[in-house]
Amino acid sequence: MSATPHPDWRRPRERAPWASDPAASRGRWIDEPPSVRRTPFERDRDRIIHSTAFRRLKGKTQVFLADEGDHFRTRLTHTLEVAQIARSLARSLGLDEDLTEAIALAHDLGHPPFGHSGERALDRAAADFGGFDHNVQSLRVVTALERRYPAFDGLNLTYEVIEGLVKHNGPVAETAAVSPVVAALSERMDLRLPLHPSLEAQCAAIADDVAYNAHDIDDGLRAGLLTVEGLRTVPPLGAILDGIGRDHGVLDRSRLVPELLRRLIHLLVEDILVESGRRIAAAAPQSADDSRRAGSALVGFSADVAEAERAVKRHLSRHVYRDPEVLTVMGAAEAVVAALFERYLVDPLALPPEWRAGLDDAPAERRGRRIADFLAGMTDRFALAEYRRLFDRTPDFG
Image (tube, rainbow, N blue to C red):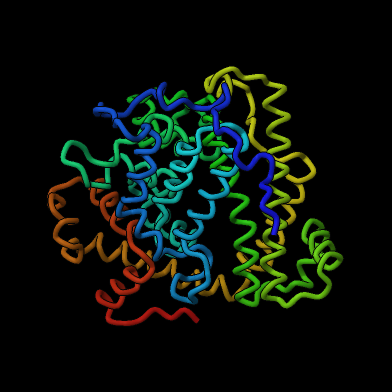
């Protein structure tokens, strides 16, 4: 066994000029004494990991219901995979790894039970009360709903983490359509909504795409919704499978699938690093704010790999997300969320005491928002238990 490390293995981890500098952070909503041991971004990461909302991610659906099998992804395992990929990108691009990881770890804290189906149902149910969006809910979690500290609600995260969550999908147009939560945060923290987020936030966002592609292929194969032969029809996956065959011959499925996913992640990550390096060199930012003002994202896929990545997504949409069996289960899950929301709305006494406190004379919008917050925090299992408690029956998932 060779003892010679890769030449970059022990390279100094110095931040590039375009990286976010924790010593120059724009601060927190509420001032706090600095830590003598940890940077502000390290503290943010640690607060997120120790939050109640983060722990609950282990019981929330990714694509398949959280209790359908021990090996399917949950929101927690998805989040950890995103954080790992994002941190690797940040390290190679000379960015602040702790900020990148904090944004990645917090990006799905607002997801309700039952994945995107639960989100659609909750958005419809709460339409008269401002609707529901999991990205906005993540902000509510970290700025208001977590109550762990005596001096403030939320986690009192730094500007840079909040900015990364607000701009998870890129710059935000400053219009009347902006969520009231985002508008209030921007007014208080001057989030400069039309600008791009930091490169650390861009790494977290694109790592989300990389992780989705890889683990949804894995889970789709495990569920029998995808086949290896079917994946061969998707150009990037077919080329990867051909390469595995040339290198290793015929492999057992238990080895073939992990090798496919490893090579897919490697393909995507390497392309991001090469393309992002090219964009950064062309833009020549000398500070984190220069990166924000670059006019376009500096972290991204090349045109060819972006099209290949979209082809993978189309295959997953057709054969996994839109599979009739999956749609049947998710339809039943949506019905659970809708029924719970309606029951709590007409019968506030069905809520736990701490959640119904102060609602007797509250405006309708406040009642609806409180119910949406309660529902969004549920795990799949707790939502099903509440349904059985309130309706004395078990939902039919087909």
